[in-house]
Length: 510
Image 1 (cartoon, rainbow, N blue to C red):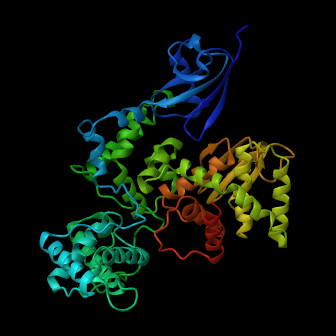
Image 2 (image 1 turned 120 degrees about the horizontal axis):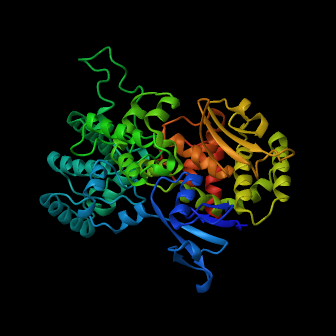
């Protein structure tokens, strides 16, 4: 009788799954096919295993007979290797779409650009005079225009709609580098801050007339020649949650028609069974059609069912995370769990201090349930901290975070935004060990995961990728993830005092 094969499959830096097969596959390719099917992996990959002959160092799995009956196997994505090993000249196809996308968020320290030679010469002399005599520089109208224009171009590299805080940072950096421009009153740069604000508005108008999408989308508002249009301040489409690529332009040489043809090719790949899909092609087509997809999502309110039909890859975990990376330039699961695990000890201590009131009593129950879990179980710790966060912020989780038994699963597949944990009989109210966790959007089951915290990360990714509003009763909870865990904050959003207090306390604790 064939003995079972017990494997620990390392999917990425943050995820590992257990796989038990009734017998050993005949070939390595058969094992790869089985892993692809079980875990819905789209990319091509090879396998490495921990070789006991070399103190469990990773070795490439070439022969299936080399694999112990109980082993740890690592998935190595070939598409990632290919991209990292290619030179710039080799990646023309892949890099072309990136030319329309930003690759950096607003920096912690804004870098003042170099100006034209004549302006740099004037500023150099002005800075010397300021150091020697404390004399500020008086600019001509054209000179000031040139400085502001260059600053606007530099700011646009990061966002077309800087916040007041970001304008202030840019103005402060300008007078810090060129002290001769410092004003004699206030902060020394208030006037420059206002001038940058107006210049950025003018620069957006120039870009809008050129057809740049992330600013032209707001063109055509009410004016003297169009008095019946919507107010110029109504329904402004701009990044509001730290998005770097909110509404990018089409890649060079592409049109709506050509991108739609590629979208159709992508859809045809998903008509195949999972094992037969070309993962590398799916990645490439998702990459190329990013601008078309964002245009659809931002400018229309398509139902989730229609988006699933048009963009099926967006509802696969691996492709979803790549989409969030395109939007925010962040590795969502890595950033999320790295921050959460760093703050976990301090958050648990804060929760222990919250004992009074209705939410305090619920917190006592949560911590009591957590005390009965294995303290080495990172999934239990993450679930406890995240559930406790909503209680700490005094927010109602009942509409979004739900639990049910397997027999009742069909009855609970309703809701606008739901994280539904299927648990065993007599399980804790907090799903520390769910059978599975399902994400529901607009009454549609869209994705599922084995662990609750991972399912929450997927839900957050879907909210970003599909441009959804945060659930009304859990706004503070999701803003904590956005602003504190992921640092996706442009300074525009007014943070609630309780959330701001928690943010400041956590920053002091690490």
